[in-house]
Length: 250
Image (tube, rainbow, N blue to C red; front, side, top):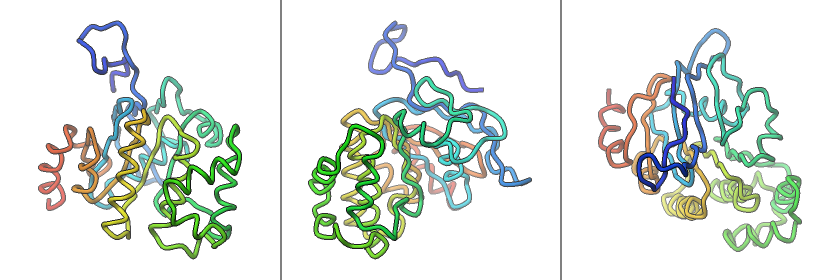
């Protein structure tokens, strides 16, 4: 089981002023029917960091994000976001408490316009559509040009921009990103990951799942490799980049 005690961040060992991890995954197991895909996963993500979860297809990375986001219940173990256990809390309550997930496949409403999608981001409270549009269009000018266009007809990169705009405007404390670069041109990926780095520098904790090692480690502050439903290795981004090649080719 993972030691869930707070670890000092940026201070000397034994410092009383300790900052708790943003995410703690403690002995989590999860299954689809009778097939178990997570086999006792332990993971600690420090605050204001970009943690890259690497691994080949079928490693269980996306399933772990589903468990952390509350979209899938573990068969055993627990997940803490901040100091709150996920447990049986509905996903809408998790969102209001500062958790935002951008799932694989964008997580937008394809039959609504860009502007209508942005209006949905206001439901969290304390936001109005004008502010949401202003923040979104400042970061992604292309979306302003397409604000009356159906989201499902946008390019893949534009759809991902729209999905990420939810995190940009609601400013969650924890952001989960699943395969951000999937199917996108390298220039678009670089633009999106530049934004990810900016969000982390503003104090947001980001856990991202990626197959493409070079892309992920360029922005990550910590990384781990997941294989067959288990965390096999964890370390600095460069250490995990060096280790990933042998894991992927195994």
